[in-house]
Image (cartoon, rainbow, N blue to C red; front, side):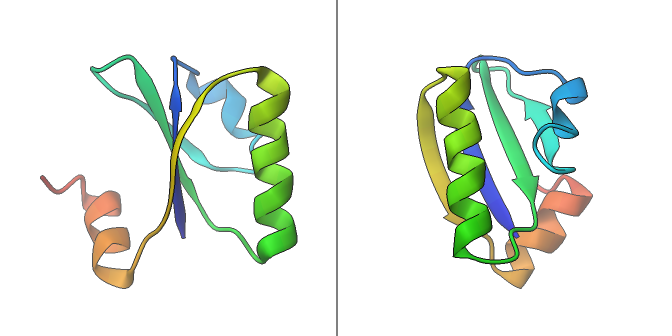
Length: 76
């Protein structure tokens, strides 16, 4: 599971374009995309899509099992 943060707000209708990723808009004006990436080629494709939108990439993180569980349960 990967978590990708981008600058700006994308609403949930973009999740289909991002292969089913969950999109969450933060109060800081940024968007977090969370979802599975099957391999490096898929990750590079996803990053190209973000680049094609012209938005700024803030971070890319691989979530461990504890972080994944917390994401699903909206932990603080």
